[in-house]
Amino acid sequence: MLLLRLYLLAGMVVHKAVWEVLKRRSHGPAARAAPPVSPWLLLVKSVKVAILLGLLAQTLLPEILPIATDATGLRVLGVLLYSVGLVTAIVARVQLGDNWSDIEAPQTLRQQRVIARGVYRYARHPIYAGDLLLLLGLELSLNSWLVLAVGLLIPVVVRQALREERMLAAALPGYQDYCAATKRFVPFLV
Image (cartoon, rainbow, N blue to C red; front, side, top):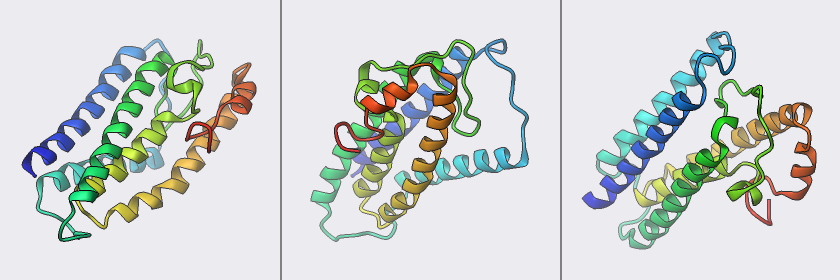
């Protein structure tokens, strides 16, 4: 169980590190004007940090709200979902490159273009899909009823994806064609 928890913890640390390194590398001070910091933005960022710290703590603590006494099957399924989600999100973030913007303050960048290669060939929002799989897998791996809370994130993610799509369709030539040809979250399905 210790190795499982270390794997889950390491994956989350790598995920966060990739985001921070690529964010700093991609968007220097001249890349775009800094958006104004609103109280709402500070609240959203604070909630994200609190959730991340909670997830990190959860991987280190004893089981919280266990689902089953023998959770071997749940753990195996959870590790598979977590791993697929982790790899999908990281690969998608790398492939998005300089076209990425913060979820809290999405905006189109000066030289942004439609990315329709790699995982973006199959899904318009592979980072969101990957992160949801990662969270679902994490909670299953930890045998926690908190897996149900992941379902509460789905409407939030869908709302954010729709908001971004409206913004990108208005700003990027070819984005509407890309939307017509590519599923939103799950290749060939949704």
